[in-house]
Image (tube, rainbow, N blue to C red; front, side):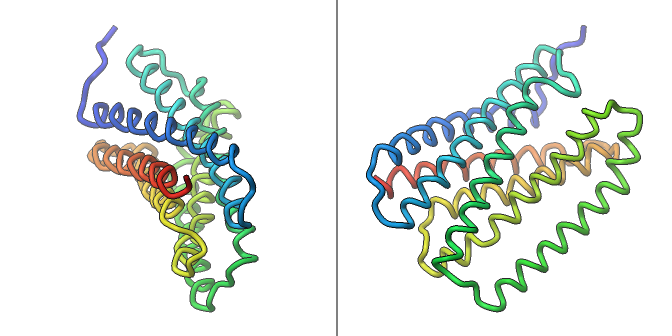
Length: 239
């Protein structure tokens, strides 16, 4: 059996996992703090639910990457494994959290005309990219895989893209003074994760020379740092 290769990307992945564990610890502490307080203002009530979902998402993500890295070291990694359960839970929770944020804060702040135009343009760009990724890379290269494996391969790029799209309203809400920096930091983490994940998918499904591996590994690490920074800022601001 060949030994696990400690490449630069693999080392960065372990550092990313460590940062995610720190973010998860901060997320749990914040969730406990939010739920121990009385309701307070309407926006704080919204933030309590948003941070609960985001906390579940980041904790699940930390567990998923930890399991994934352990399986890779042990050389027992399979196309579907227990890490996928936590990835699905993580992405679903993040999507619910930011979708809830979008819906609830829409009652407190109306977007200016140029902001919906920008958001719609980004959505169109993302859907065009997904179409290219699926038609040119994922679908033709995943033929012959079991249905459950293919379903996961199709699900992940879509849900990661949706999470990113749900965060597009965060910056306008921040400019309007509806929110402060913690959610903005976490939305930056989502954006960086989205870019990293799409680079990873492109590199994997186009059978590249893996010259992009270090690039997306660094972006995943930056994403984890934003998550940790967001929950740390929330710990300071929402005491």
